[in-house]
Image (cartoon, rainbow over all chains, first blue to last red; front, side, top):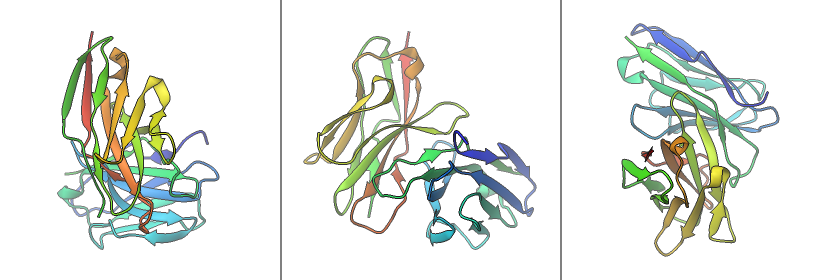
Length: 114
Length: 115
């Protein structure tokens, strides 16, 4: 596609509910990142994939957060037993391989836990 | 450890005047530096990056940034501001030497261009 696509754009979940957020990266991009952006803050790193391999998950805040990219393209971020502090915008980004390459971001999924 | 500081939460500038959005960074090695802009209800859009070479880099929409190694800064500039430049701007860094591939972002600076 032309850009990184994320769905849904908005998600309201009741506390304790499980949610799944989808990211469709730019075709051919090897690297895929998930970030969490709280209101009024900069994006904070959650996890990184190179193709289907999850090479870094150091930013995942708890074991309730899980991400996968089984075929090296589409990725899903899953949050189990959501809590109010999980409310944030979840951003997905993709890029070509290489540490000097810029990442291209999707519009994000705004998660509100009530 | 990597970090980015954007000392100004808010910058106001009159249309047609030059603008500067400040950024300083901290990395253990040498940096790759990036600027992104975020419009309401939109994702982050890439503006420009510093990789190596000329310290002055030019990017999209007439923006430029100057890498200053001694001051560990990478300030974003534009000679003449437009009302449409009003948005949230983020500086980000990636260390060349460490194993981390992710970007570290600042907290953002909201730019308002006054007509």
